[in-house]
Image (tube, helix red, strand yellow):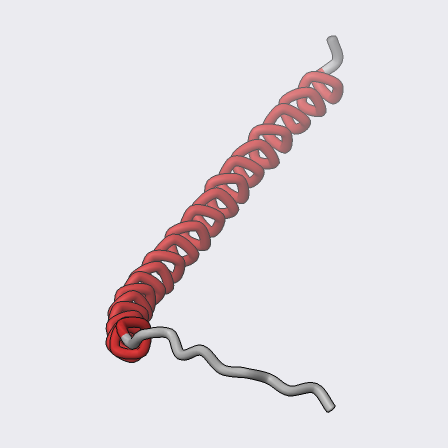
Length: 90
């Protein structure tokens, strides 16, 4: 094999190794960026979930309060004797 061809093969091999190394670095960088994005999304979703849980608790408390008010309003009127009336159609 002439020395020119051997040097060319070695050069191609070195270039391929450099490209593979760069590609691996890029792949690791993209993976890290992806994971960082997922972590930030997870943190944001967790915070939103906490806020929504708090809001649900507040709404349940309000619902109980309104239900008690409604029951207090309906109970006295339902214990009265039913009144009978006459309706005249003219």
